[in-house]
Image (cartoon, rainbow, N blue to C red; front, side, top):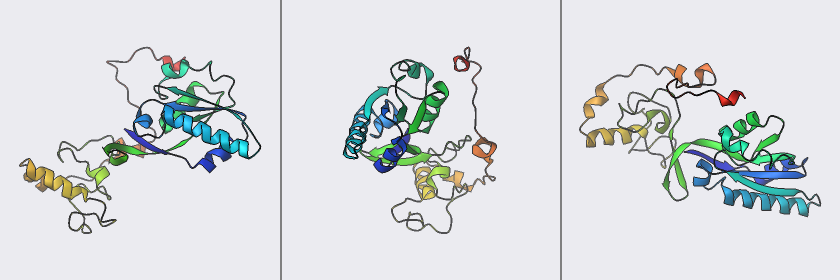
Length: 228
């Protein structure tokens, strides 16, 4: 999932200062699961904004709305009329959701309420770990499901660097060495021979090197309603 955290309240208040009719919009997927941008968080943020504006003698009309996904036009279209009178939308979606809202409602001011952080998974309640950089050329088949690009601080492709010790990364004793994890996984599966294979330097052209990426599946592509 995409993981994010709410921007500091003071920063949000500063960004919203010029506006009187504010809609705090939650998103019902990733940010709901990571407890930063769902319906509950939208209501809490709206209440905090309303209270602080009232204390400052500059009251505002603050409402909330949560849709299933802010990154898809069909869900945005369902609430376009409802937010027509708002001066601004404070989006608690990830950066993708914010930008999709802007594309679909170009005349509406949309501001981010979160700092999008990384792709990760929930290790336990309230703890998420980054495990994918979306590099566009997955090597998990070679490392048996543990990503050296994300899990190794230096994105090493051919084993650990000289700074790791006792299974920990040199940047912190709290960070597991990605290649130690890969080694243990290969050992468990009887695939240590894979450690002897030499990987060439990574071709980063499949990542952000070539600018914004686009993927087209002609086999499932329909008429592009996003152009309408």
